[in-house]
Length: 217
Image (cartoon, rainbow, N blue to C red; front, side, top):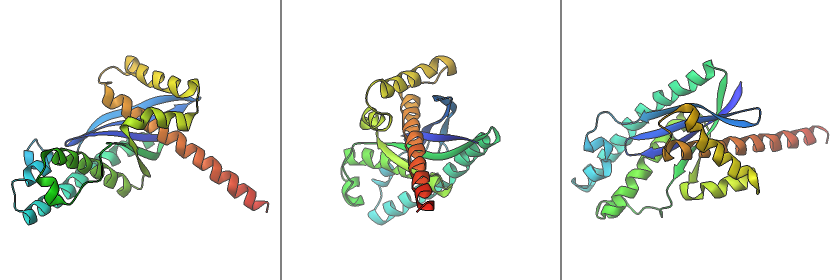
């Protein structure tokens, strides 16, 4: 089966998911979809920290735990369906990457709920963690890549010179073939997936080389 990687760019209540594989040395977007991890559009689910700010602290903690469990419960089958669909077409998911913010570590819940900017930050982290937990339940290795570091990470993984720039150009051009939507959501998710896929391939090669050297020791 051909190796592939999932890239996720998260929003409140959903994620833009793109799957990247390689064929003859060139990246291909083999699937893209919007994965919803909330039911309906109720504030309590879509913006759990905003809703929790109205509650007493213990109730707020309980609400956020419940929302997390429900969102993961929705994310797992949606991502499992994606994985199984790709498997039926000859692809295996080797890894995943979630785009991260550049924010500082969050304080305890009471301080988060007392500061509106921290509430927004916490909700972004909340839904990123939902996707991470769901992917881990499916036993898919997942890493986080800070969104502002995407270009730098591409250079680290693909090397200096034209390789990283060429990759980004190819990803930007995919929208002409695939059609809309191919916005920043899909482009950045695709780039994160490509970085994760190449990193995993190189790690596997290194491990195989080490194992081979040990067998001759």
